[in-house]
Length: 382
Image 1 (cartoon, rainbow, N blue to C red):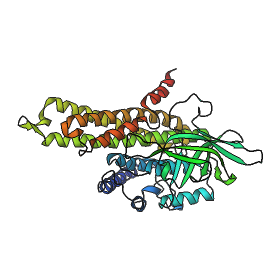
Image 2: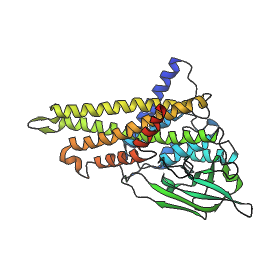
Image 3: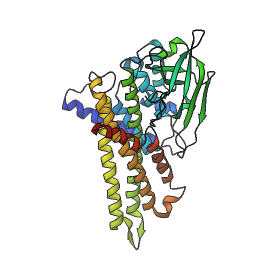
Image 4: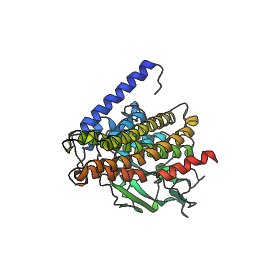
């Protein structure tokens, strides 16, 4: 999508705000741990935002997907949007277009398929097998066949997948490829991994010698290592958007509570300590939004369909690391402060604040901790 004038930019911003309003209204009708129906998300067009119009999608960009990701965090929604619609669709869009992947994109946009990307969890590793962020590998058998091996932990929504998009190293040249695998195939196992956040479903995907048909091995359309980096950046920024939604929800809830909760005959929002705490929360939310806006814009420019994708990829990695490291840390601090400022009610199960704090805590660790992203940023100065 190319913007050629200020008026088009203004129209696009207005359309995104309308998308945000619709998403907030729809998601606000369902309270966790209940989840909005997947068919409702499909009929709203959210599952096919980045799918080309020729494949029955909206032909939008990652910027529109980021709006939905933020609103899902604000509502702590229990849907497999991260693993399927954000990472699954994003992975399929990086591949060389063939009939099978086009069909899968069309089905995913309609809510008829749930392709889940199996990537690295973003944790730095010293293992030679996974040092480049590719957790699986293909190997030839004596009979001339190809088998898949490897393991990835904390894969979002793998347990609900209709197909797995496994990032693997090719047996031919060692380049990263995507292997489309049936989660029920022999040699493939998916083990649920309980985490502190009950609104998310993570799993460990293990493949021990699953036989792979040649047609299931898909090549990236552009430089494969750059494509893998884009997918990792996409995952980090999507989680950062979710964290921003969590932080904003907690800020709004705290300010509203401080206006009506009285102590010593006056609203607690009139106390200087509470004012300062809310101001600090607002600063963190504001900085998070600025960093995430920059990162989302950079990722949209680095998309494979973009003419400037090659030159934009490096910049996108830097701003993605900034956004993820700051926003995920900030969300934990804001949710924790919200619990404190709500007083005793904030620690009760009925308040629901614990869900936001738990989600923020998981987001901080998912697809790279703040420490790992800051370590990556520090290499610019060596």
